[in-house]
Length: 129
Image 1 (spheres, rainbow, N blue to C red):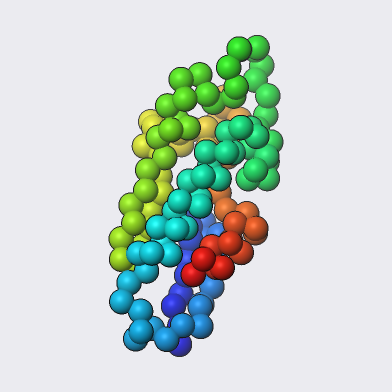
Image 2: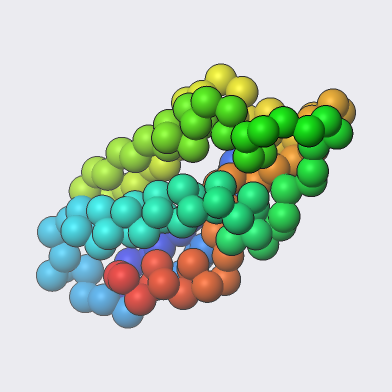
């Protein structure tokens, strides 16, 4: 028996591993969850510099020219990722009201992924734990 480590993005499971750890020796997971949160928030921030490439999908270009980078007119969405680290769970989200439309895409807006996990990120999360 071990600890089941699962991470979901928009309800889709992106990491599911059972760690070979004696569960009765673990009081909580706050330390590795906080380290994981810091790691992920750093990547999500840097993803804006690469316009999506860091998470594996370059954001579609805009139809019109603007002097600021894609999704960074004010910087609010980039700076607004939040975290909640609890003893047995970690939640990362962006409460910006228009975040979900860009993250998922709509008929009028192309999908520009800002929150996701890659295989390399999953490997680092498992290493942290």
